[in-house]
Length: 328
Ligand SMILES: [Mg+2]
Image (cartoon, rainbow, N blue to C red; front, top):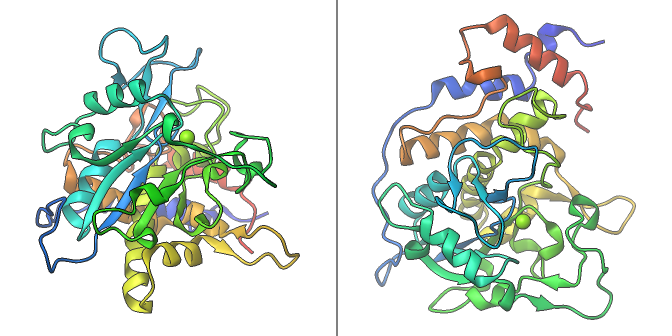
């Protein structure tokens, strides 16, 4: 049985503590369309459902920003997930050549309405800031050896019939190797475009506004609620690897996320990335620079900040981490 002291040296413990040190250093604003001679454009393509938004599933409670602001869209209302505006804004202002785009399996009318109401810290809507918006109407039906199961999350891996073909973003000087799809469902990956995928992890069965109101452990809660911060940190790490190794960002993301399967077959996800405190910290710092009001969601009940009830937080983490399998 690991000691509490040992447990508190684990990545998740560091993850929470490190966020108490978020800095506010600003970076220069980056135009979405760089002038000639600027770095190559990189397109960050965001899925919508369970990546940026999540429809309210009873009995999930309503809190934070919900869209549309009035009424519903085809019977649904959507929670905007943690760090969405900060993610979009921080990429545009800090990543040279960055463009943001959207590709959702939902209908175009819904997607455009949501993106028109989703505001960035600079006052633009996500729709106005987008390089391109694609919807269900532009998804690809893949025939052949694809698996009929769709939206089954982690188990589906890269299989599935309905695909998002990222070649549609390779235009206006954009190379396909510089197009990144950020999505919760691996099954959307088009054949030959697996390296362009940044995986957020599978969607939770239940979105918890507060720890304890649903079945998630403290670790699951922190991972899910801060998944965009982790993804933002992973983007920065991939950009660094791209520069140091002289490889495209898509290749860098592939090498960071996936490991060869010794048994053959599908690659294995690099599991330690889920609890890599440095990734969450880098992402949260970028979000904080984009919006000083941004706050990392800690595993403390009722939004209690670290340091106020340290014993209670440590007990929560110890309980959660005792069920985390050791890293290989
Ligand atoms: Mg999704």
